[in-house]
Length: 315
Image (cartoon, helix red, strand yellow):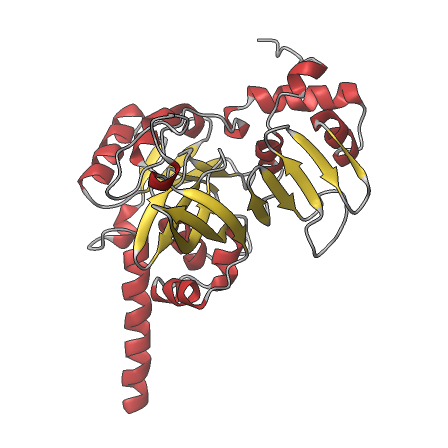
């Protein structure tokens, strides 16, 4: 089937934040509708590249250049407008790079779920993200240590996020999804900001590993941190409600490694996938059998190693 080539006006409607994410660029900080990046157009240590998501326009303070997606794409890829439209047509046609799957409303403990734009919901009763920055707060670093996740790994994929809930400010670890929302965690809080969505990390391999939550994903990276070969592509569902919705994405790959929680809901998803295609979908949960998920296994494994070292010293 022939792929239909996008026109300029259609290309300009592609969300810049999502397109930058597909190229591997994540915001260093977010303030309201302004997303700040280390410039994709030059090397720098202080973020100077701003995207206003509402206007879908960018401006690079370091170079003095800016504009829409067409202006950015021709500079970034050093190509003509026609060549860029070919690239963007392919981007739009590939579900793996489609950053607009169906979304659900953000939710949190003790609050009724509502759609993100529903006017009946007051500002004080929903999560309002104020700011994001690299992980630094001592209590968050201690929490990562408790979960046995090295900062060098968490820092690649997570941010320190400040948000308001019922008028009270919280500081948490934030893991961003493909629609710009966050999974939010600290030792005392578990929630998410709207819009709720999956997170897909493209490592350009022909297989994909599927996780329910981002701590299982971070545990996977920790277990495999000494590997020289690229890790599998990674799909973090952030909610099992996205499992069936992500089937078309998963089935683009030759193998789908299921690294789901070993609870009733996770096991039901595993059974469903094996009914879809037993050759394509592979259950990897035996690796952490007798544990609820991969992070639980990692914590027990590392504690056991430390205990063995202590016992060895005593001998």
